Image (tube, rainbow over all chains, first blue to last red; front, top):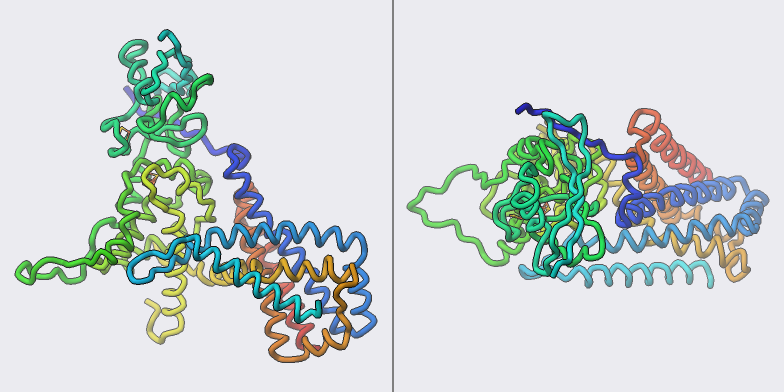
Length: 128
Length: 247
Length: 112
Ligand code: SF4
Ligand code: FES
């Protein structure tokens, strides 16, 4: 009898093995679109600093079919980010009231309420 | 009552096998049987060489963890009836070296578990004469869930970060550290932080959440780890901002 | 083992995740749909006035810098998940891109 432990290495495509890991990977890849949209915002700030003509060029660019398509894609992933982020917040920051844990559902709902209120505020400020 | 169910069991004999391989067995199907019963049947009736761990047969001892059709489960907690009309693939827990057949080497976990000192640490022990250490139900509620861990290692098998980086302290050990950190009688949080808040501690976690999904005892290691990240971050900034805070 | 300085990376990651979750969808809705549809207009004077205001600057900077950092940190972790390693190159690309965005947006806001 000899000891010769055999280690099976994790596969490179481990995240394809279970739905749970695929959802995780999609959640992580939302960050790619967050980054790309941030880049768009940075571009907007630069154009704003450059003056009126540059800014109007920026507005035209984000209104072009390609710009809209790209941003719709960003919107899908950003929304998925929001949903997954709020869903796990109660785990990271549980709230205790009088020695009892506030139900996770309550915390998540509160986040959705703040999300809706903030979005409304921004929309109103933008002049909808 | 002659129905059978097929089990494909990963076999590995360090003396004779170069690498693991699957072996197929036909086992009588019983509605009330769990996978552990099927393995016991194989060992008693079909093939005495098959090796696996078990003890309590009631989801308490934590020794019968295996991969069943790719999912980490307790063999005594997984009914054959949920796999009827299919093949049951039984493998040793992912991410651990295989000692033999379904038996894994768990030295790595044992070392990590003891590194977080999962027991009450107290600065100054209260003299016996001063009475018991009282704890209110509210204080107990803070950590009770985490105290249910049976060290079955299903969470390690589910955790890709542990698979990718064997240095990672991992879900159960970090959850148990959190359990004692939250205990009103314990004062060892800062000491545990040397491991828990190290590079191989909570920071390796990317919050996949698989550990909590597979835990048979309702422990939520993912939650414990995120809470530790929050509190370790606050402690870090406190130490950074307050003069003389950094040690 | 010793306590890690990771909080320096992680706290902005977590705050950025929160800011992104609350603010980005509505921003994208505006710039990507309502502006192209003509429902919302972003006239130069108003945008400039907003970005000129110190509080406006701070808000804009936070909305760009924190999510950018969040994304960089998460992408670095994901690169590791995908087996691309966590080496210097990955770090440089991810965090470097974030720092670049932070620096450019700060510079633009200072000029405005
Ligand atoms: S946390 Fe759950 S899955 Fe992990 S070892 Fe403990 S009981 Fe098992
Ligand atoms: S045999 Fe004890 S947990 Fe399954």
